[in-house]
Length: 228
Image (cartoon, rainbow, N blue to C red; front, side, top):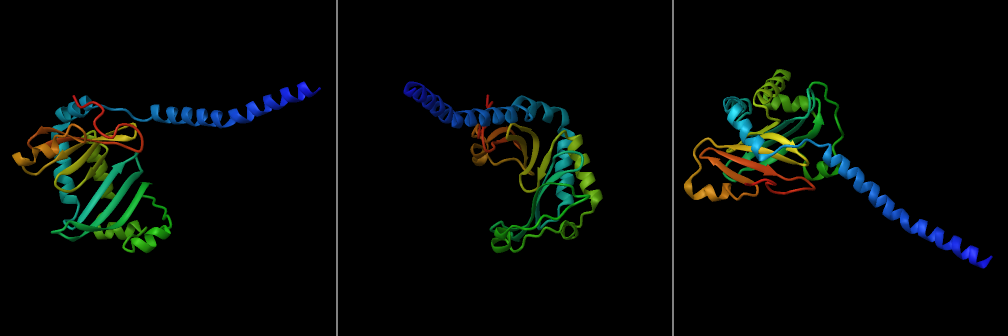
């Protein structure tokens, strides 16, 4: 009788001990499924797209620079036909390049926007931030037609995102949790700065005005997974 109880005890102990392991395995399987179901791209596809869509990519850059007012810095990424990521910053000091965040939302519909309450962090540390997209559109002098125009420009260039500046960053495609991009300069990169834009990790020099870029995500490669 004692032996049977001991046997049941050790069986129960083994089951209890295996639960954390099972949980870890399930989590890893879920993460693997999520990772492998994400979009995938490569440096070769990045280069090929530039060769095929160069005219539209450069038109996207030039058009966007005119769409965004001079004192603003705007990042927009198309998630699907309607939703976008939108980050808007206002420059407060041209020399120091200091700016303040006015709006920063992920996966929103600019045509049917639902206000999300600002976090307590934003209220305390980012008093300039708003959740009023109509106010942002007014500041940028944008309308719904502006978002449509940007989406069309991105689609023709076969790209997903753009951020103004010098260089202008044009996102080509997500790959896992990373993203392949183009950095487009207004003028040729000075010879003494080329090494900064050719580290084979985040940047690969392509031509005097174009640098290929890769930025990693929370997991996965943090630099070009295919630098050669």
